[in-house]
Length: 169
Length: 200
Image (cartoon, each protein chain N blue to C red):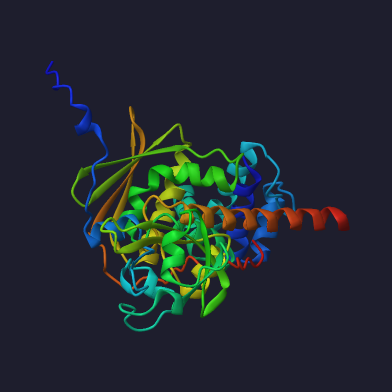
């Protein structure tokens, strides 16, 4: 058996890696890259489907989104200085669909990478924006969750019918 | 047999051949005239008796009746929820076939006490998928064949599906993909989740 040379400690350190836009989009179809001026540089393929017409590149992130938590994040610096925890935000044109996001520095020190997702609003969101399986990452359990919800509601309907029959018996 | 299966066959008879034939079959095969309860368990003989009665009355082999039941589950308006749950399996028919191994798990999520045979898929040749059913009643293979044929149609794929019984391996359903984008296919959207069930 071949024994691999034991790697030095420095080789085991998580590498600082660069990902292509295409790979990033496969991992996070709902990501956004924003510049230090708050302008959108690029985005995953699902983002334009969220009722956002036209080319989003160059548009201001805060013109499209409204961060509701933590409070008082209204411009790029606020976001860059925040604690990096979970963000609650809304699309300005679909405020009834709250979203969750996380923002991390883009690695060059001149912008942020945000990964967006729907929380409990996902059921309404897929309906509103007509999203499909391919709009979510392969590892995302959203589709499984939707399946479960639908299966549950079908079973519940059957249960209700049985109860009604028992009631009238 | 799980009541859901009996109820599906009952609805198949009623929706395909009419209420009168269901009443007639219920009487000749001594079935509950008001119909089956989806949440109860019934003796296997009840199910087989019902299938034989349809087969005699419609002069069709039992296998053909079973395949029709499979087709009914995917295509009829009263079974829309089932078609939708199946379509969650993949965006294309090929993708659906690749997730077929997961189907028993999906079914278990929906109906925890429904006995569903294990499905093992293999690809012996390009554009060919073989599904092996372990520990399944032979009847199940025909229902699966009906489901797959109807689903292929729903996805707009042109396929050739065959069913064989091997002494060692059991039931094998083999699917030959002739054209995966043969027709437009029916629309499926994750979002139309307001499940409209009529009288399933």
